[in-house]
Image (cartoon, rainbow, N blue to C red; front, side):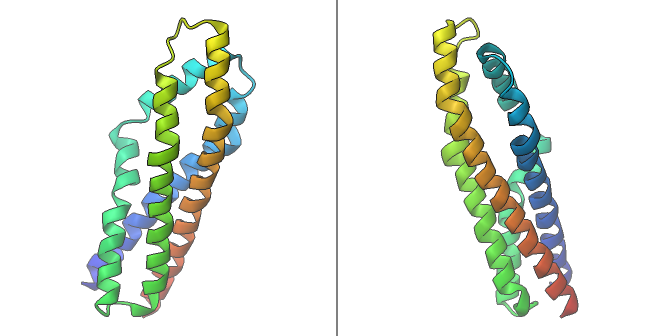
Length: 164
């Protein structure tokens, strides 16, 4: 059981690290870069990014940590590395919160932007961008912080687990 818990914690940490890195990169590079484009380029670029990201390279590290963190929590509660339990629970809470932010904030904004036709009038593109850009970037920063917090908690949980 200890090996299973170790594997679950390591895989969850890897997923959290990948998600933190992705969302941080959007916060400090992608969105600031796109902010310098015109409305048409911004809308089309985000539409292409939001369509392209739905693939296994994103979905596996995004989805897999949740059940693995639940498993690690159960194993810790059963007495395997009980000192790590609060940190595993904290990691699970932060990861789940980031997952909810993505599903309830960023994805609906993506879906709304996706409905804007590529040949929309300049006023429509400006409106779509105004409704999307700042809100999406703000919520992206929230999920970047949450994934980073989850990673930090997981790293400490792994340290405690290894010390037990």
